[in-house]
Image (tube, rainbow, N blue to C red; front, top):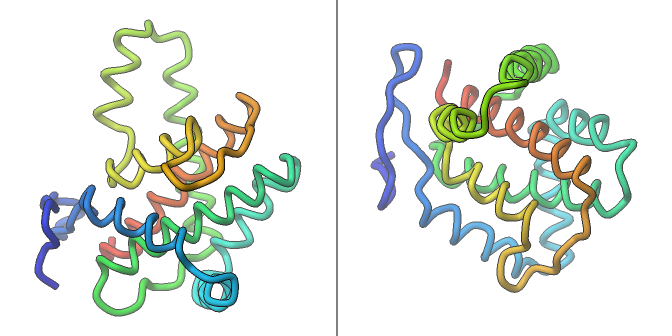
Length: 182
């Protein structure tokens, strides 16, 4: 598939992969926000069928959060999945529970190593290592901090924001790995 407008190339594990562009990110969340309830249900069923472990991970990770936070997480999962679907020719390979667990542990360990780092350095490190898909992660951060135009703001506690950030860092990384064939 030729790169979409605004995409960049990066190398990873010997495979050349595309960044998902800011344009694709913007178009996707706006399109999904316009889905009818019946289309959203059909698409969510498709996600559950093609990536059951990812959906289970989101449910398990959010089970102790508020209903609003869980609903937002499912909505965001759907939007992020759509972003990847737009940019990957064919189907995204099924992601296993082991892949999800390994990625989650790796991210959690990296975040633990950052404890106690001075804020100035933390910001630089975060920008450099935030995600393999910076525009997708930007959507996540923006949605957690303030809802995009036309989407109702979900009140989240700081703890819920932190949990959802870690959740979506994992989701984006495993989708990126699966889509890139690594």
